[in-house]
Length: 176
Image (tube, rainbow, N blue to C red; front, side, top):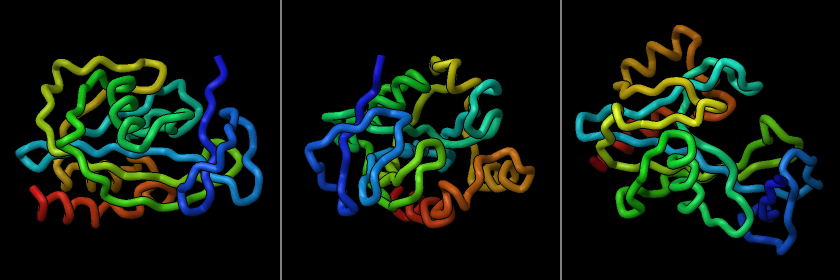
């Protein structure tokens, strides 16, 4: 089945055009993606490990994310992606948009606007159900543990997708 995305301008406004996943975007066209960080009462973050057979960051730790499908807003995409990848039903009221930034797509030709969401929600890790085509493991990790994973080279490259990570950690702590 073909997945369609809304085409956006550089300000995030829908242009009325649709884009087929995997095809290159025209100059000045963007699609919307989301990254979802979940933090618990202990100040840990729920991170997941990419499946080893996936073509993009195989076997590396990261946070949940994906593209918004046509007709979907950022929050709806965040809720859907988390449900699909981890089986977690996030409560919309527990989330807030932390940051939006533009970047070249790492997987498809073109540009992406990435909305980064932060959810304050305790999740029982034993109840997670993975989409094994994408995710093979998950854990709660302190920011120190995440830094250790980064230092070991086992986390997705910060410079490509998570350049804001230390800012996010400070934000989560201040707004807990």
